[in-house]
Image (cartoon, rainbow, N blue to C red; front, top):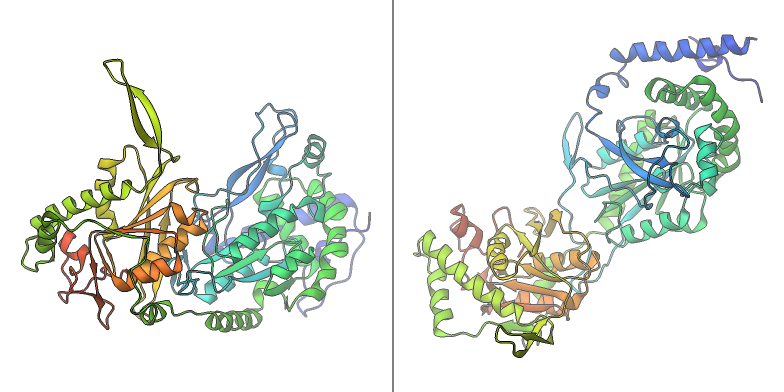
Length: 583
C-alpha cells in the first residue's frame, strides 16, 4: 500500500502551495486526520458552506440502498436517508447501513427507489422553484415531438457532482427537472458479496457493481416523457449523476451534454473522510482501507479516463460558478429550440371536418335540453346550477358505462332459475378528473361505480404563452390494465384534454381504454382529441359549434368552475377555469 498523505499535504499553505510531506507513523497519521476532521466539524457554525445549510438539510431526503443480508440470496432494501442537497457528493458509503452478518430478515424483491418524501419545491436564497407547470411535450398530432434534455455528470467520489447538479437546477429556474443518481442502480449482492461489503472488502466503485441495463432503460423512458417505477415522471431536463456516468457506450448516446466535475484528489479524500467518519460513524481505518484498495484505483482506471469524453470539464466543482453559468446558458438555449405551441396549431386544424365516429352525444331528449337551458342561463342561481349539473353528470356517467366491454354470464335467481345476463369484462374502472371543474363529476362516478379508484390531474393555462401546463398529478398505481374515465366539464380547444390523455398514455394506459367525458364540448376540441387519439372514446351531453378568438365556447356555459363553486371572478362568459384551465 502506498504512503498516505499527511494532514500537512491535505491543507494548503498560506501562499497557495502545499507544504512538503513529513514522515509520520501510521498512529500519528490517524490522529492528525481525526484532528483535521474535528477542526472542520467545529468550524461549521462559521463556514458559509457547512454552516447555515446544515440546519435546513433534514427535510431533503434522498434514497440509499440498504442491503439485507438475511435470507437466501440476499436482497437490496430501500430506505430514506437524510442527505443535504448541498453536500459535495451523492456517493453513498454503505457500511453504516449494513446489518450484522447473519441477521434474520425475510428477502425482499429488488426495485428502484420509491422515495415518497421528495420535496415538491426547491428553496433557494432568492426564490422558490416549484416542480410544476410542465408545458406540452407533444405536438397537435398527440405524438411526442421532443425528448427531454439529458445532462450527464461524472467525476470521482466526493468530487461535488450532486452539489453541481443542485446548483444547475437552481440556476436553470426551470420546472420539471429530474435528478437521477447512479447510486439508485447498484446490482443485487450475493451473500458472499454482502459479507465482503460488511468488512469493507467489496468494490462499489467498479463498473460491474452497477446495473447499466436498468439505468439505460430508465433514462430512455424518461427522455421519452414516460413514467418509471422510480417515482419520476415528466421531465424537461434530466440530470444523471454518478461516478460511472460515462462508462457505458449506450448510456453515453443518451446524454445530450456530458460534464465532468474535476476536483483535486486531496480535497476528495478529505470530504470522504469527513463524511464517512463524522456523519456516518465509520472508523478511520475502514475508510482509508476502502479508499486505497478500491476508490482510488477505480478512479485512476475507470473514472479519470472518461474525462476525455466530456463536453465540459468543471475544475474545482461547485466553486466554479463561471462554468456553471455557461452550462445553464447552453441548456436554456436548447430548451428554447424545443418549445412547442400546441394551442394555436389546434385552432387552425381540422376545420369543416365531420364529427368523428368515436364521439357519442347523449340523446337530446326534451329533459336533457331542458336541463341544458337551465345551466346555460346566466340568471340561474348557483343552487339550481349545481342541482341540474349533477343530474346531467349522472346521466352522462350512466351513458358512458354502456360503452364498457361486457360478456355473457348466467346467474341463478332466488326462484332457482337461470338468468342469462351480462357482466363487466374488464379488470377495473378508474376515474381521473382534470382539476378543478372535473372534480365535480367524481360524486356521480362514485354513485354509479362501487369502490372506483380516483386520480387527479391539474392542468392550467400559462398566462404569458397561452399554452396548457401540467402542474399536479396523482394517479392510482397499476392503472395500465384499467378502463379509465377521464372527466372534465368543458372542452373548448381540447388542449387540456389532450395533455391529460397523453399523461395516461405515458403511464401505459391503452388508448382504447380511455373514455373522455365532458358536459359540453366545442367541435374544435372534439376534432383535436379525435385526430390525435383516434381510439379514445369521446362522450358528452352536447357539442357547440364555435370557439371565439379567446378560445371560449360559443354559446357555451360560462366558467363552469366559477359558477359551480361560487367564485365568479371574471364575468366574461369564459369557459376556462380560474387560473386558466386549458380545456
